[in-house]
Amino acid sequence: MSPARHCAVSIDLDGISCYYRIHGLGDPPAELEHLILERALPRAAALFASRNIHVTWFVIGRDADGDAALPDRTTRAANAQRLRTLADLGDELGNHSYSHPYELARMPSDAITAEIANCDRVLRDITGHAPKGFRAPGYDVAPAMLDTLARLGYRYDSSIFPAPGYYAAKAAVMTALAAVGRPSGAVMTNPRALAAPADPYRPSMTSPWRKGQAPVVELPIAVTPWTRLPAIGTTLLVAPEWVRGRVLSAMARRNFFNFELHGIDFADATKDGIPGELVERQPDLRIPIDDKLARLDQMLDEIAASYSFATLGDVAADVQRDE
Ligand SMILES: [Zn+2]
Image (tube, rainbow, N blue to C red):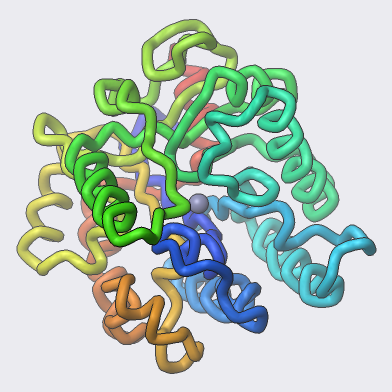
């Protein structure tokens, strides 16, 4: 690839239970466990296939684990097959940990290694080759993660989200939930991430928020130049049209656009039978899927005017080569 301006679209396949945890709602109804992979993922896949865009899917390993000891074995096998088809068509499968613990960055290093290595095993089983990239749950990075990624031969981490506004909003929500006695399952991101570089860089192995000499590169999630507003798809989908326009035109000044979406962006509360208790707390679920797809299509048109699309794995290879 030439040193062109690239946009990489990634989709974190967080299940419904992740959102129940964030909002302190306990466990979701069992029949909703695989909703994102079964119903939302095919919609996203159809949209990107129709535009000929190869994306990176960040997979929670357990959801596609073929291990016979787990419940819903057939469902997990079907999930694995869905992901294999996408990989066969040229998409990338990335590691999003085995069970998505929001406190992963604070866990002991052997637990961190196990979470990453277990998802790695599942992805190798699916595609027959080693994954190239990792995204931490809740954007929270720890040096032990980089150690494990380096040992497994990964090319990149894409977890740093240097957006002070997002940090403040998350802190406010967590404080509010704690105040009403319903603590959130989310964990505060390490504030050092806020001052991290916003363009791809080689992180320090001991302090991933700073530049250093790690063998893996860091591909930070998109924030606008100067003001560092979040430029993630999930946020932009619910933002007023003028905000979307302003953020996207500010992003046109960056050489790399790490455009992050989540599986839930492709869910529809009514069609997919998502309970009111979650819809009430997730504004994106109050927008019908057709509207969300139309907004996304419009954003992709705008992005396509300034960028060519590539997977995060391709961008990481570019960064390593250009040094
Ligand atoms: Zn996630």
